[in-house]
Length: 191
Image (cartoon, rainbow, N blue to C red; front, side, top):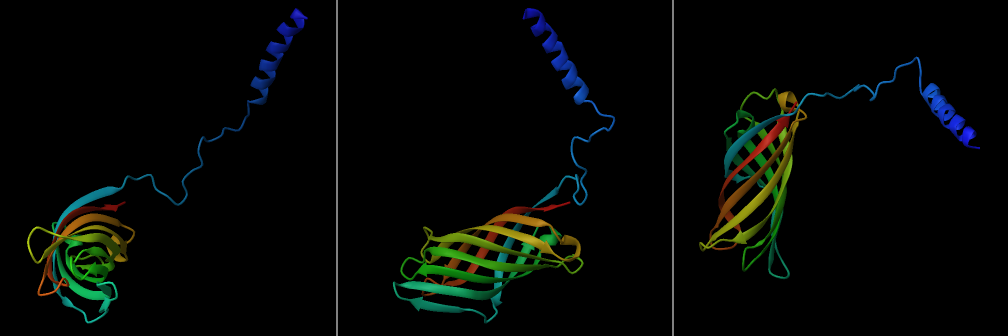
C-alpha cells in the first residue's frame, strides 16, 4: 500500500504538468480595443463669478409653510477663471426652496459655460447643489456648492470638471437673492 502511495503522487504531478502545457501561448489579459492606457491630465483652476442679470425664465413663488420656491430661474453670470477654458459667460437655471424668515434652504441647478478662449465650439455643461445658511452679517447668506460638469463638443469634448464654490449672497428687503459673489477652486480631467 505504501508503494502505491509513492507511485500515485508522482504520476498525479506528471499528469497535471503535462495537461497544463500548451503550444499556444496565452495573454494574461485581453488587449484594449477601444480604450487607452494614457493617464488623465489634471488641470487645477480657481474662479470667481458674479451675476450679469436674469434671463426672464423661471418663476419664484411663495408657497404654504413660509417658503420661497424658485424653479429654473435663469441667470447669466460672468465666470472668471485662472484657466482660459474655465472663463466665459455662464447660463444657469437655479432651483431652490428657502425659508422666508431665515433665508436658509436647499439650492440646486444646471449650468452651461461657454469658454471665451478657443474651445473649438465646445461648452461645459453640469449641475450644482448646496445648502444656503445665514451668515453673521445681517442681509448676507453663505452657499457652499458642489459642482460637476462635462465638456461637450470642440476641444473639451469628454473632459470632466469638478469644483467647490462658496457664494456670498446679498438680499434687498427680503430673503431672496439680489446679488452674489462666488469664489472657488476645482479641476478638470482630460486625456
